[in-house]
Image (tube, rainbow, N blue to C red; front, side, top):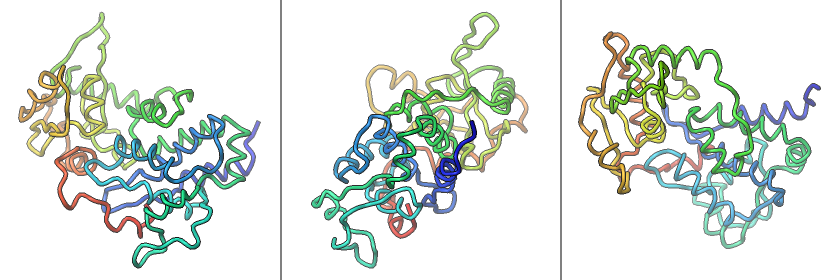
Length: 310
């Protein structure tokens, strides 16, 4: 049965959501708020939620999946998602504004418990059509996050019931090409365990994520074991221009931290035998700047994002 025009319009709005950008940096704040709100719909919660309630949950998502090493500002997407026609806020007319901005002070949003949520018509469409909720969530994931994080993000947003699609043909071909180039061994630790003739727990990571324009080419890929694949996509590890392994100093823990991470710091990654298939510097630069969790510095904020439609 074909979708209604209204459902198609909602999905189009989600595809075209305007995210904050600076150079190649893209902030996933609005996409994460959309997923959080979709989770509320599936649990039958009220359409509008007070900002303090949403802030607490959105902050957790932003800390896990937002821009690495940046200050977390849940108020930006809460306010600016209105401009995409996917959000509405009630009772903010008389709040004190930020200097030179139409956006209220975050302290005002908290103190007055300003409610926000999907517009009534969009909220109703989601509640009447669980398939539309799944399509919306998958659209957000495919447009803003790497495949290896999709299940984790869905679970964190309260959408773990949504089934992820099977890998596309180009994903399968990319994986095969990358694993062949790296001799079916992890580029970071050398793990190459097989069960029979099949690799066990090995995958191919995009260095520059596909949603950020990264191509399905071996020079934009790394063969990684399951642990280092997740760690690479979460920004716990990266490579410098000399292919030395970088390990985030923001990792913590006891069991596995030294063996799987700190002991690798400074080592040279295992590379393809064919030099022309080694990771391209431009993709490594992208990962280091956009994903890797470096030490926080005073400049690592999203200053100016409030006026840029975060």
